[in-house]
Each structure stands twice: as C-alpha cells, then as structure tokens.
Image (cartoon, rainbow, N blue to C red; front, side, top):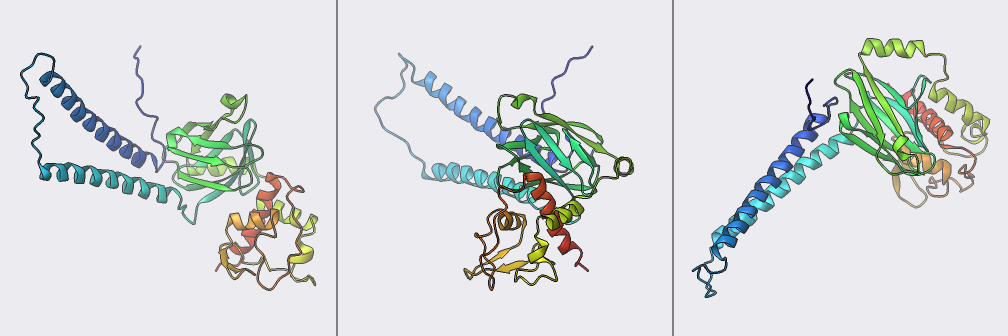
Length: 313
C-alpha cells in the first residue's frame, strides 16, 4: 500500500495551470524573503549576543544604493505579481461567446442546475470536455459560493444579483463541488459533483434526458402568463420599450445616462423597474419582486436574451 498526500488538487480546467503557477510564484517569493529575514535575525542575534565584542557605539554604515536597490526590487516583484494576478482575473471574467450557459441556483442546502435544453440536475452538473461553460448563479436565500477545487474557480451566489463563472473542463472525470461560504447549519452538507464528459457522451446524456421545456421557452410562457406581453408585445397599444434585440445593447435613460442591457439591467428592470426609466417612456411598470422566484426570474431573463440571439445574423 502506498501513501501519498497530494500537495494540490488535480488540474482539470483551463484555469488550473495558470492559477497554480501564480501560487507557486507567490510561495517561492515568500519562502525566499523568509529565508533572507531569518538569516538576518540569526546573524544579528549571534553578533550582538550578551558578552560579544561587537561594536555598540551606535555608528551606522549606510549604503543609499543598496537601500534603493532592495526597495525597487521589492516594488517591482509586488507589481509583477499583481499584474499577473490581474490578467488571470480578467480572463476569468471574460467568457467566450460560444460558451454553453447553464442556470444555477444555490439554496439551503443544495445546488440546482438547468441546461439550455431544459435538463435539470440537483447537486450534479454534467459538462462537456473542451467546451467553455458559463454557470449563471443566483441564490434563493443567503450567500452561497460555487467552488470546484479541481477547476480553480470560485464565485459567490448573492441574493438579489446574478453572478457568472466560466471554465473549460480539460479532463473527463468527477470533481468535487462545494459551497465555500458558510450558509447555515447544514453548510458542510452542501456538496455536489461536476461530471466532465467527452463531447459525444455529453450529447448522448443530453439526448437521454430531453423532453423538458427549454429555459427560454419556459421563460416565454411565463412572460405571457404574467401579462408582460400585454405591454412589451409587438401589437401592444401600451407604450413600452421593445425587448427585441435588447440584450447587450446600449439603452438611453430618462436620466440622460446610457447603460448596457446586461443581465444585471434585465434583472433590475423586472424587480426594480423604477431604477432605470428608459428615455421617452413613463414610470408605469410594476415591480415583480414578490411575484416571481429566482427560478422564474432566470427563465424570463433567458427568454429576453433569446430575443437578441434570434436577431443576430
């Protein structure tokens, strides 16, 4: 029997090698700096020990060049590590346009996932290897944190907001999914798995679980049942902004500002309609804050986003 303790979790995503390399660089810098400081402490402790003949007159030999050199080197290394981390952070927040988008909701105490085709999962997330995946996160109650150690990704799911995390799985397998934010008495039991599959096996898995209502289609049905089409429909007589091609487009506001219609804007427009009044329209839309839950909100947002996708060439 062989015993081994892995120093780091398995690398299984596009982010893992870069994050690990930065970690090792920080570790090496800290270790090297620690060695220098330890050497100086031991040296001066021995030199100025009780009874030694070391000069204690108070005269100091000062080298301006040496002081400038070590200060400049420390600043350069610190800014270099900062820039390195900033690049990784920016890449982590720029999902490719062709990524698969999966809706996720954290709740006490489970993870609920819904694929674009309507396939649902609880505490398991199936993804294809080699293809970018965006997980759109929301919380039904308190702050949760989507954490997959093997992928080196972690993102909070915050009540009242939509957050996103993306990754590309590089190796087939089953990988631990944790909630990394204390969320209540059963926080330690809020665990799951991300199952990375070869593309053909993933396609077969989706096909075997087909039959559910696609997320955008469910959003359209809910959109109409709530009466939203009465104002925002093409044949509506009530003046309301058109939603066709809205997603990711600039929106002029009555306050003379312009905002981009991203997910946060869509969410605010549904739950807090008075926050962004579109130029040329009155503040007449009611709030749906207590009328729909997070799951339904994700459906409606997916439907509005699909209206923009339908108009793309």
